[in-house]
Image 1 (cartoon, helix red, strand yellow):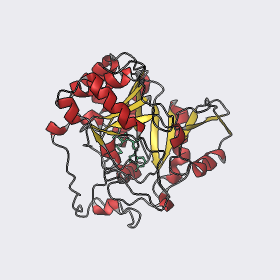
Image 2 (tube, protein in one colour):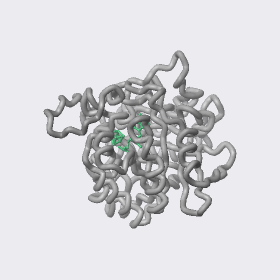
Image 3 (cartoon, helix red, strand yellow):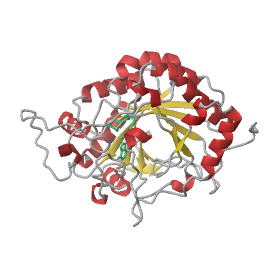
Image 4 (cartoon, protein in one colour):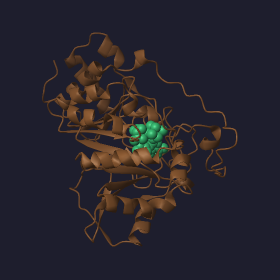
Length: 357
Ligand code: SAM
Ligand code: SF4
């Protein structure tokens, strides 16, 4: 039996505290940096956007989704989270794909909110279905939600997500805030030539609506492998844009904090933004995250090239102690950091939608 003092420490001295649980690989959006709908969307950096809805729709890219039998059940996910919490995990985020597409996700939230040791349970969603689920999620114990919203312009939102859903997402974000699921964070992936000119408008939106806007660098995790360095708007560039408009100052974080966002507050007291720059300013040295995919694979890094399948153990009669020892062994092998920009960088086979962002 694993000792309760066992923790998830890797060979570089980092201790895992944060588990991201993907509950589905499916999505109702088709963000072009994640799951582009068509070849045209996948090649967005080459083609000009006309927004012409009149012309024949180009053929959709066919994605293969995992069959249900391969997805971990809610019981299985809860078991992994309980085991992780016993090993020091105290932060759990439910994500996907689009987590609100998984039937009865509020049941899972209810199960996870009761796990001793989990002090922070959150969800990341594109927000389109949030209005329908918000009350049930809150009753089930969800206290925090992060939304993804890359544009405040209806046409650009459609271009980036493949769906005409800006109004629903805005309603969802405001509902979360009104329900007190705070701090409500809104993430925008910034891509050159797509939404970089909206950085100030998005920041202003955060200020007006009393939300924390977070800008994220585009990472090479897109299904179409269209990522190019030129398309990355660096954190420094984003900050430069903001600081030429507003007076801002850094928000101090404890040294060696695992927080990925560098936070900046507006000196007029109206809110703050976060800048997440994994490409230009990697934070791997402080990374305390693990990921569990919807089909039961543990990933020690977003950019891992190997995954560790827990399903055979979960379904093969392994004891909690055996599972814990196995997980601790997986964590010991966590990579020192990602290799983006290095000559030997290899993009993982699975995309952000499968890994769980
Ligand atoms: N569907 C939900 C959503 O969009 O919020 C949850 C899953 S999504 C994969 C989680 C986060 O990953 C989103 O904030 C999304 O913007 C981000 N993401 C997806 N692909 C990305 C990429 N290539 N680079 C940077 N962030 C990405
Ligand atoms: Fe779906 Fe989220 Fe990926 Fe967009 S980023 S396609 S909403 S999983």
